[in-house]
Amino acid sequence: MKVLYLEDNPTDATRIMGLLKKESDEENIVWVKTVAEAESKEGNFFPDVILTDLNVPDSEGEETYQQLQKILPETPIVILTSTYEEKNLGLAAIRKGVQDFLEKQPLDSEKLHRSLRYAVERGKIQRELDATIQTLNKTIEELVRSNSNLERFAYLTSHDLQEPLRAVTSYSQLMELEYGDKMEDGARDYLQHIHEGAKRMQELVRDVLAYSTIGNLQQRLEEVDLNEIMERVIKNLKIAINANNALVKVDPLPKCKANKTEMMQLFQNLVGNGIKFCNQDSPVVRVSCEEKKPEEWLFSVHDNGIGIEPQYHDKIFEAFQRVHSRHEFPGTGIGLAICKKVVENHGGRLWLESSVGQGSTFYFTLPKPK
Ligand code: ADP
Image (cartoon, rainbow, N blue to C red; front, side, top):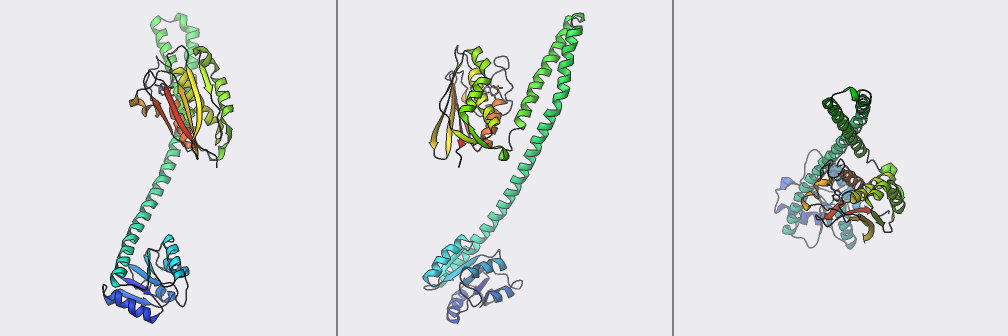
């Protein structure tokens, strides 16, 4: 092991050099008396570890190891302390990247060498960790970039697909109106299928567009009163509520820092599903909120509907994944994927508890404003 040893006191130096020589060859130990002298060795001597006193003629206290860290940034450092104040400095130094500190007295060769060996090992691990963190950060950056590229692609494609789709639906409708009675039954059937297919595609494209426009919250967070959001949601769902004879109960809700439009989408999708996926005469949906942890709200949307088998509890949050066919219950399967994206973008989690025939409860958390 190659050691660079910084010490200006000749008595301490003689004693500690003696301890160092017990385990390392003489040519592997370089003794310097000042930081400047240590700097002059740079490029000629490549130590595995630096052992240093804190007070030397050209530097004092933490400045000493900080300068050494600048000169040899990759090399682990062990500090030698003698006074009580220096021991405190030693502790602070560990927080600033120094590997260890040792009291000069009493010090034996075994203790010294163990500390130096550990410092070298920890230094290696630290460098590997730093390299891994750097790679991870780069990967995260690339992922974020490619994710936003993908979202932009989805947005542009779905946006541009709307126009030709509108043309297909309009012209198939016009064709049916103007030439429908001149057509044979088979031809009219085909036209009907074209029309329905295009309409369905329009719904899917609209949902991809809605999904891809969620996000980029940073600039659009504001204080949102969730009681007001629920009032709007109930107004928007009026037709479904009346048609299904549904009851929506809303407990007092808090204000939170969020994106208003996305909160509307979240509550409307969950409450709307509670009303839709129900075979009862009168669906009942209850929206509540409690303060389970000091840093977040826990929301729940409970219904008395058909329930969901446990094996689908994760799958239904993926885009276009549905448990039921379109003929049983209408929809494209994007609603819960939107909910998940909204909740996660706001720093929360979304999950459900449900069993078939027992209704479902969707839970989500939102961080409290700081
Ligand atoms: P959609 O409502 O368009 O089908 P969602 O993403 O909102 O899309 O829901 C995905 C699937 O999860 C639904 O098709 C349904 O099978 C199931 N689901 C969602 N909410 C409920 C609920 N409250 N009760 C029972 N099943 C539900």
